[in-house]
Length: 206
Image 1 (cartoon, rainbow, N blue to C red):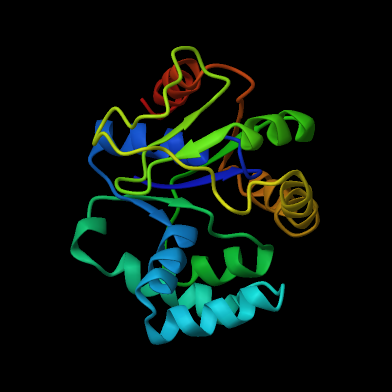
Image 2: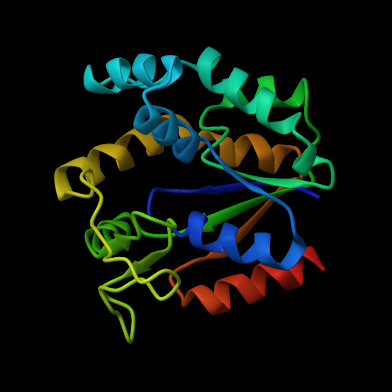
């Protein structure tokens, strides 16, 4: 099964994807993680992307589409995959149709103010990418998977979060209408616990 996860930054796409990955043994493909990894390793792509981001611009569709096309050709995608962070625009969605067939588009629905609250409390593991939140019960600064100290992403400031939400509303929200017209969209209220959201999605997939 080939899935797309839609939702504003902080809606829980990454957390849900990791749970689905464990259950169905299909890879989570996050364009954001691919780009950040290239920036960290200072690859030619990473340097090019960093220059674009430093100018406050968005990475072009051409670059992102080529990254996804190459990734879907890798062997671990033969039995399915989850796209997290792609497509971001209707133009990207149309390009995706040329080389991939999507089974279901999962839309995580959440109020923008709730997103701001969530992202201000988000903490990540710099070693294994484990994600948690200071608002959750039994929160700890220590990663339960590898023991590293959790950190806050540099761009998780209120100003940056609201700007990302504005970009999402303008460019990505139209995807909801696009996939609804194609009868591929299923919405889930994600103002709930990660466990309940996961269980509701699994029921739909089953």
